[in-house]
Image (cartoon, rainbow, N blue to C red; front, side, top):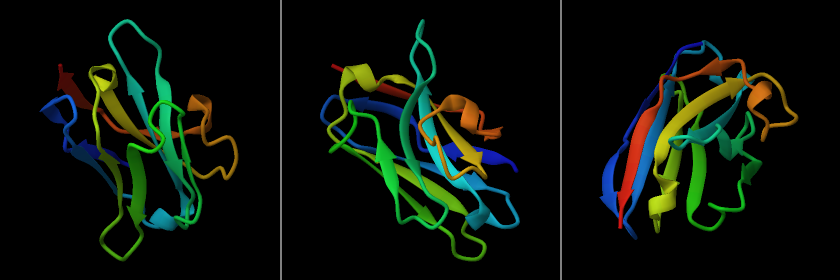
Amino acid sequence: VQLVESGGGLVQAGGSLRLSCAASARTFSDYAMGWFRQAPGKELEFVAAISWNGVNSYYAGSVKGRFTISRDNANNTHTVYLQMNSLKPEDTAVYYCAATTSKLYLREVNTYDYWGQGTQVTVSS
């Protein structure tokens, strides 16, 4: 499975960005998807995850109410999105998309088998 993120960039505090992650998986709906981020000097941390069918979503407390994860399982549109609103300087990080066949422990880094290359998000104050 290959994952390619896009949509990162520089935005002012209070602004919005939408990240996309295109997956090459033959059966995209076999995979739960997650977004993680890593700020300079910090560990990789969970941001959001969504179940294989899009019914269940999970968020880190720091982004709940501001970020929304969604996915499109339609044929030839194997993409997961992260809509980020009310961005804060502390959201600055490299954001990674990840995929897993597991249905459990979707907040855990080690659950995920496939990772994208990351996209930089910078929020200026």
